[in-house]
Image (cartoon, rainbow, N blue to C red):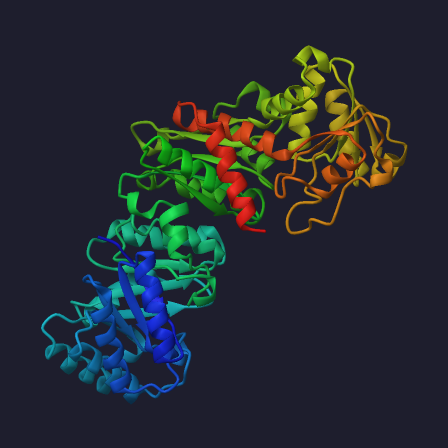
Amino acid sequence: MTYLAVPIAADNLDQARQQVKAALAAGAEMLELRTDYLENLSVDLVRNLIAEVKASAGRQVPIIVTCRDQNQGGVCPHPAPLRISVLASALKAGADFIDFEFDNFRNVENQERIRVALSQSLTGRLILSAHNFKTRFANITKLYRDILAVYPVAIPKLVYTANHINDCFAAFDLLHSISGEKIVFCMGQAGLISRIIAKKLNGFVTFASIDEQTATAPGQLTVEEFKGLYRYEHIDSDTELFGVIADPVGHSLSPAIHNACFADKSMNRLYLPLLVQGGQREFDLFLNSVLSRKWLNFSGFSITIPHKRNALNYVRQRHGLIEPLAEKIGAVNTLLIKSGVTTDERRTNGYNTDYAAALDAITSRLKIGSDGLNGLSVAVVGAGGVARAIVAGLSDAGAKIKIYNRTVERAEKLAAEFDCDFAPLDDLQSLDAKLLINCTSIGMHPNVDATPVPKEYLKRGMTVFDTVYNPVQTLLLKQAKKKRMKTIDGLSMFINQALAQFKLFTGQTSNGVLMRKIVSASLSSKK
């Protein structure tokens, strides 16, 4: 079993009572009393706190008592003798676990006091912890073995900062390769997924905060996010993994909609936010690491900024299948991992669902068929991955396209590929098109007061399509509506491409109404 533990990080007893009540109401499976946060720390204070927790729980909730050394992440500078006295008294008061730093445990005097306290407890156990707040451990497996060599019945806790998502694989390998109780995960945004899939990999504990304000470590999710967004209670060793590869990725609504749709279909699948920073090299290393670990059970990815081109190159270099349309567009937004009998037979296939999603959004709003796009004058702002997909689709339909971009050379290159016109952004002042499409991220949250096209350039009779979906009503669309123009929001395209991705991931049709409901609720909650 993997416990979902909630740290109680309070300055005083009253605040601790409130946090305990909130944690239990949220569904905490374990409580960690971070007594190093208490300002007037004493043995009696901790004993009273444990008694109150046991009385108020109403159910059996395991308790960890931690009094962290300030040099290793503790808050208040409590002296070592007091910290050890607190841990010893916690065991007498009925704490199930005490957490003590491995480095400090190697001190003979400290170790003797802890051992004596444990010998006097019938059920209390020791967690020996090691933290690296800067980077990976030099050899995490050796450190794990060193802990057990000193105290064989300890539960090792090994936590380090992941400066890149690729740093997480050392933690995954340890969880997978060695049986027995252990707590292993990574801190920081790049390490977020290690907290979520700790349950899949049979970690003993993973930690969640009551809310963002009470988080005790970087990258710590809330209980609500664990249980709602990431369906924590349904994760097991057989859970199939998917995710969105992006940088940044925190704003993505893909985990919300795909996890909701997996739940709707009662599928044992989980969709994760995958922060892959860097360029082609880092992207390749991430996918190679995934492919070489079949036991992680990753099966597919959504790909977005800035990796759509990297994804295409990856599949090409490894001779995977590339959908002809994606090859023509020159960008991949969906990857599937196809498994063979052996690891060597695993390969990636690339697709692009942006193309059809955009055209469906346009034709639905204009109430025309695809043949109605023939000869339509279209101004496309931007020359990135989304622009490539839309230009390819409109070009196939016979539209008359002009691409505007800040870097004129990129606009020129894209225009040459699809036999259309191009111009610098300054030329937007003489804009003359029936359909204007923003394919840049300008106006995306949090920069909601920005627009790629000044309002004075918008002309009546024009339809304006903004591919940004957060917020749904961008400044560009608001200004277009004031001039009584038809508008198309990015949410329509986002839902369309997500429906197509879900079909690729699962072979089943998803619920578009549910997707739109989830996105709308998520966007409203962030306002």
